[in-house]
Length: 311
Image 1 (tube, rainbow, N blue to C red):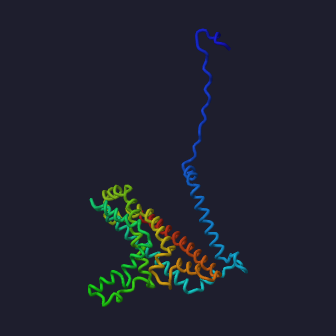
Image 2: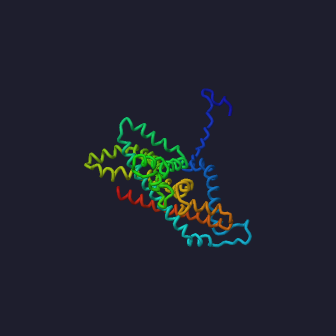
Image 3: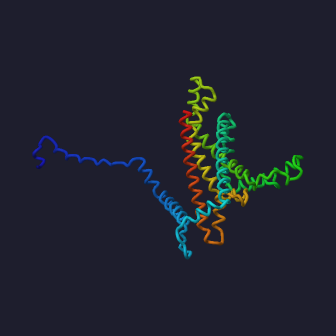
C-alpha cells in the first residue's frame, strides 16, 4: 500500500520486535565457573597424589619385579612399636598445640579489642608474625630453648643453674615441648587475627543489648561472644591442626629421631635405600590423612554442639 492511501496522516509504524530476555546464571553457578580452571588443576594434582599414595601403600610398584597388592605395609606399621609411639606423639603435639593456640588467641583478641589508641600497633605486631616461616621459627626456638641456647645461658648467669647444660632439656625431648612451643608461638597470632575479624562484625552491639537485658560479663561472653566467634575460630583451628599433624621441618629440628612424629617417620621410610619399604612410607601418609580427617570431623561436631548449647 502506497502513501497516497493516507493523505492526511503518516503511514503506521512497523510492529516492534519482542526483546529477547537474557537469562543470567545463578550467582553460585557463576562463581563455580570462575573457579573451575583453578579448582580443576588443584583437584587433578591432589587426586592423583592421593590415588598414587593409596595404590603404593597396597604394594603397587610396577618398577619392581614380583610386586603384588597386599596389606602387608599396614600390618607392618601396626606391629611396629616406633609407629605406635609416633602416632601418640603426633596426637599429643597436634591437639595441645591447637588447643593452647586457640585459647590464647581468644584471650588476646578480647584484650586487644579493649585497648584504646594502642590497639592499632599491637594488632600490627601480631600480624607481623604471620610472615615468618615455620622453619625460621623452629631455628629461633632451638637457639632460645636448647641447653646451650640463650635462655640456658641467662639462667646460668643469674645463678639459677650450675651450668648451661643443667638447664632442663626442652628441645629434642620425648614429650615434644619445643615443637608445641613453636606451633603455639607461630599460630596464636594467626588465630588472633581471625578472632579479631569475627569480633568486629556487630558483636559489640549484641553485647550491649545483652547488657541492657541484665546479662553479666560471664553471661555475655558465654552466650554472645563465644558463639559468634566459634565458626571463625573453628576454621582456623582446623588449619592449625592439619598443619601440626602433617608438618615435617619443625619436628625434625626440635624433636628426637625416636619417637618422631608421623611425617618424620614417613620420610625416613621413603628415603630408605631399600625400595621395598616404599609402601610403608605411603601407608604412613595415608594414616596421617585418615587421622587428620577423623580429628577434624570430630572437632567440627564438637564445636557445632557447643555453639548450639551456648546459644
